[in-house]
Length: 310
Image (tube, rainbow, N blue to C red; front, top):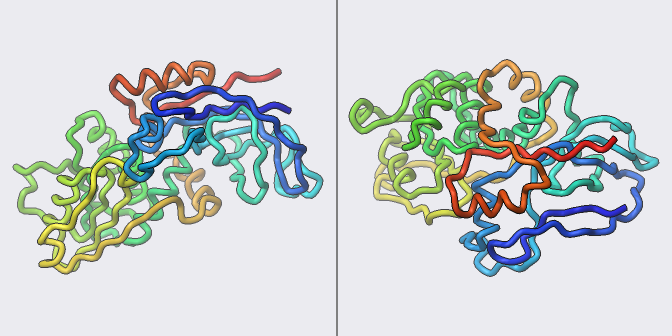
């Protein structure tokens, strides 16, 4: 069986390439993609070829890492899935794929494509929040209301039940969305200039935001960097040493299966989460849409729908 993959073949160039899939192995699932997502912050630097975390890119490169699919065949030792089941996997922009059963995340009935896909980045955000483990009475400042920042607010509010969540981002649309999913207030130099915070999370990948967090934390406060480091270098300021702050980094998710059990019970009851997907595009149009993204304003997140096969 042939598989179509969207690959970066050179800087600023993506194309669909064809590959032959081997037979399904004992613990594997053959799946057909229903929907995927473009993760703007992670994918665009790779497509442009200017990701500072990958200074000498080697091509071709795979694209994407969030996939929602249906099972179309199973290996003879698969026990947790059957044909027709829906799942999440991490193979990216492919029309079909082979997935290890142990790495596939089952998706319950009634969960939309958008909410299913948000489980992955929600788990990544949750890992950083869990490293700080704030109490409901703590105050938290979050910079950068991209998808990771918004999902950080969601987890702070709906898992840790933190009441005082203040967010900083220059985009009024994104800060408004943050308020709708759990933030308490927007940071500004005028009305919150004297407030300090026990915890902070950096989701913007911008040095000015990172410096603000260090300035606004209380002595011995905790700060987690959740941004990828693929935009600007982040530097410690004198406040970090004077206050003896604690800094931790975080990458990927803590446990995608365990997080999914909580997320799929909680997310359907939180209005506005699906609004993180600001655009929808067909997989047939992905090549042209990536070209568009390189020259135009970028949405928070893009839903990619794959054609159904009768």
